[in-house]
Length: 247
Image (tube, rainbow, N blue to C red; front, side, top):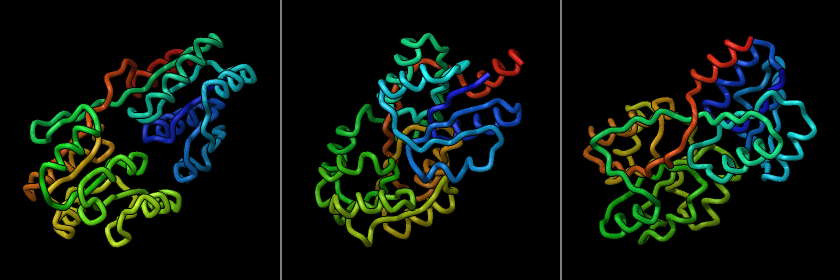
């Protein structure tokens, strides 16, 4: 029984370890070389660092006899999820979407899209700790005086750092660190850069969301959160139960 997983996320890595314990042959497709280091050495897990569009996924499914395709990509990677679902349906392969259980809190200010966050920040002043990832760095260059105001915290990858610099972010403001971060670490960084705002994406507890919120509360920093898209799917634990039931 072969399984195909899309996603170098926490859920994707946990799922790969789970399937490895059952000696199920699994192909794990991740988007970046960085995520590969966390799943190396697992029995029966083949890791491919490759970005696939819908047609590539269809060709992949036709070449392999997968029991199912598991979409464990990031909640904001909507195009990838849509491609995976449509490719699986086209090839008549079972498709499972693994969804994260969000940590909803009253303190943060929630926004439906990035443009709303940008408009909010352009109506105020003060330093910004940007923790929403490198993918949307280009959009936040629309913030007034972004070169001085924004302190982007990104993964310690050469490609991410290069992109941030090319977009005009100040070298002295770029923070390259691997998370998730503790409340104490977030608090220390906020105090160090004198941040009035922290920008993040709605996430599960495993992504360090509450540690960011609590650090903002402690430092009286405004926590601006981009809502994750509404989607249907099952939790990681539910999928594990399905596999245990089959085996």
